[in-house]
Each structure stands twice: as structure tokens, then as C-alpha cells.
Length: 223
Image 1 (cartoon, rainbow, N blue to C red):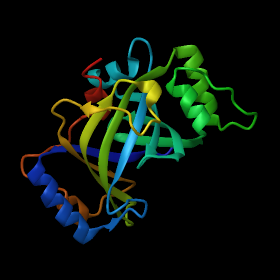
Image 2 (cartoon, rainbow, N blue to C red):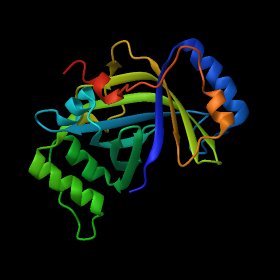
Image 3 (cartoon, helix red, strand yellow):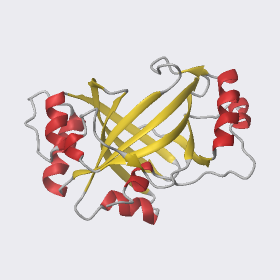
């Protein structure tokens, strides 16, 4: 399993404007972004005792969480993702899902898998059965992504965090969402073996330090 370095830094609107200007001058936009941004909607899963949430809040060194995700309202590109964290390192695995599989999972049902199902999907279904994983929160936000090839660096600006309670309606573009409390904007920086100095300097902000902010935890404020 290959891990990447990751920083998360809470930022304010003035920081967002300054970073956007710097990053546009230094980095390439993500080719999949529409006009430089896209909307991400995720559905997070957790155990009946909220293990993923509690491990995050308690700062457990090694933890994992599962989510379903799609972009810009396009349910033709659905993915199951497993994110593993080990201190400040992270790994993300992903496999495609059909609309039928995603709809069943959002409703709390366990889908029937084809014989050639991907190992990650088989692992997820196994944990649905043995650990009681169930949908817990819809997480919606806007992301501005930037890429820098040396070091395989990806920098994102995330803001407008919203949440929804009707997990079964996860695929519905008309799902009603509300602001997730007083959530800050977020700068995320991910890289492989090294972070080039030019990018390290560009993301420095006075008085800002890496944090452990979690969009999923923030969206669980209401239950």
C-alpha cells in the first residue's frame, strides 16, 4: 500500500483569495474541473457505535473510512473509496460502482456482487455484514484543484461545506442540504516523496498550521 503525505490547513476568505492567485500562477488546473472547480458529493459509512468518527476525534494513529463519491451531479461516474490514514500519511483506494449498487448502499441494503467484483468492493461488503457499516452522512462541498507534476503534488481549496440527512436520497440532485455549522475553508496539500520548495513556499500562510479538520466529523454535528 502506497502512502502519500497530506497537510490540511484551515483558512479564511482572505487566505482563499491569496492562495487562488498564487496557485493559478504556479500550478496546472485539474483537467476534470469545470471552470476550475467541481462540486463533490460523498456518502460516508460508519459502524453503529461510530467507530470512524470516534477514532478521528480521539486522534487514533491508524484508521480507515469508506465513502461513495461523485462529481458535479454526474452519477454516471460513481466510486467507492477507502481512505486509510497513518499519522500524517494517507492512502486512497477506489473502484467504480453502478447506480444500482450505490442506490442499494445508500438505502442501507447490501448489494449482490458479481463473481468478478473488485477486491475493494468485496472487502466493503464483508464489513457491511460483519461490522455493521451503514450510511451516516452526506458531505457536499466545492473544490478547486491544482496539480504540479514534480513530486506528484495536488493542492486543493475546499469550501462551502454542506450536509444532508436523507442518506437514501444521496443520488438525488434535489437533495436538500444545509451548511455544516461554521465550517472553515480548507487548504489540502498532498504529495509523494518530496514537496518542491516552490509549492511549499506558495502554501505558507502567516499564523496558519496543519490541522486535523475532518469534513465527515463536521457534518456529523447534527447527528
